[in-house]
Image 1: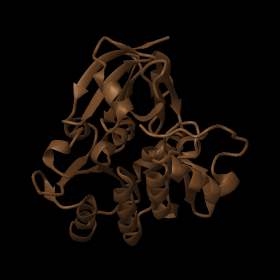
Image 2: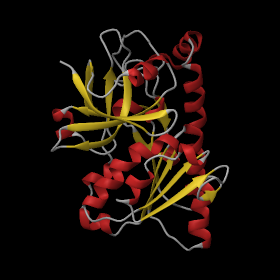
Image 3: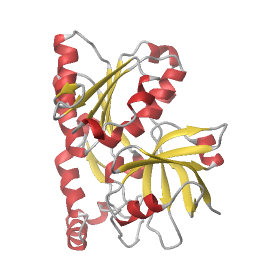
Length: 299
């Protein structure tokens, strides 16, 4: 079976969106989940967070940044062509979809997206909007050209605040500085934050929300490799427990995550020597219990 690329959009120089014809995935998809894409028979499995889904059209949107061989190969495919595998939805949906709607309407929520993180934030904000819940969104990037999903987000969020490190667009500074300004200078109050972006950004965003006493959820989609828990790449310590982002998450309590450990593992997992060292250090907790698979890595 193959999956047709219904539409392809260039979001900036290195990020693109594809709408894939996958009716069964679209029908079952929920905010926070991901899919595994395999371009051809010999292609690598690439986990990508669902950026949108349309049940009527039977399509699922994915957003990918060109960083390696697999993402470059996916990028080479054009509208009308088909990819080999499109498996999903996988992972645990965002927990708020199970909450009582009337209770959710009373919550003051803010979503903080860094770079490509705006794509997985969008279906969550869209779902809340469709259920009559208004939320605020902060989108940050290094420069104006790297901001994505601005117009889409403005259609579903109450307020969208844009930040650039270089000041080329919107607020000049980091998303953490903008959050502090909203809370400490503008008197905004939030009961829940959802943060998605690069690991270092999520780490400092969580330090900020902890200081501001805002419970925070983060998505660890960036550390997934195999997407099934077998490779051990997405092993993370949450509180005192070992979790695997692709099967237990990808969303977790951001204030309970050991980000320094996660970032160290992310760097080490890129080399074969690093993978072997991690296996020695972590022993039987390196992969989920009962997994005897070989390790493969890289996108």
